[in-house]
Length: 202
Image 1 (tube, rainbow, N blue to C red):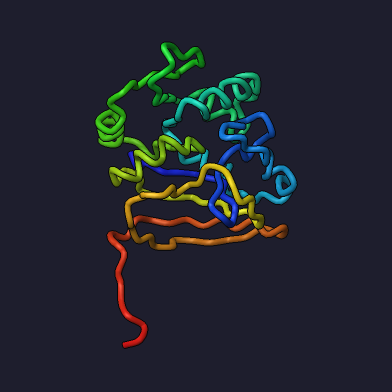
Image 2: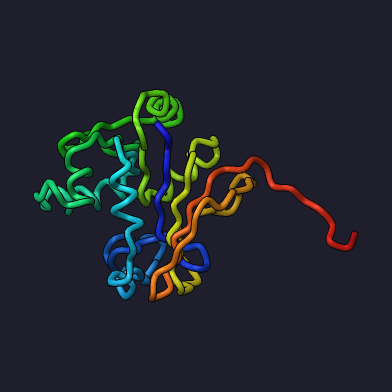
């Protein structure tokens, strides 16, 4: 399976609590819910992405947010609820001792090796949504095969960022890009090895 990341990001790289004010207030973050004003303008990026999923990989916080909402959405034809409720969900957590959402499984401490084993299985996409802390581990070990980054036209100035300080340097290749009427840009990237450097003065 290909490991893919879908992430909502502000122009200054913030990914914390996009969905609501109580989603994640850690670190005193008080800007939760910043995607809401743009929700009517989403294009088909999200439904299209979920249509490619064969399994999901979630961090603890994202799992808890999803598990409190999506199991209550019972329409099997819903393009997001259907795959989330039906497909396997692997939860990377050192603090949870059980997961109750149907199809969910804890993968414990050895996340890197478990993810490598999952990627070796046949299938389309093993998808990560949100899960900023988990993403840092995946990036550090070159495990992400495709980035779907939805960039929202605002800055917040604080909050957890997608590529945190100390992120491993890497180049990305833009595969596709499209935008909505209200300024949300959906960019798809593939890893492209190490960055190249030069001297513009030459």
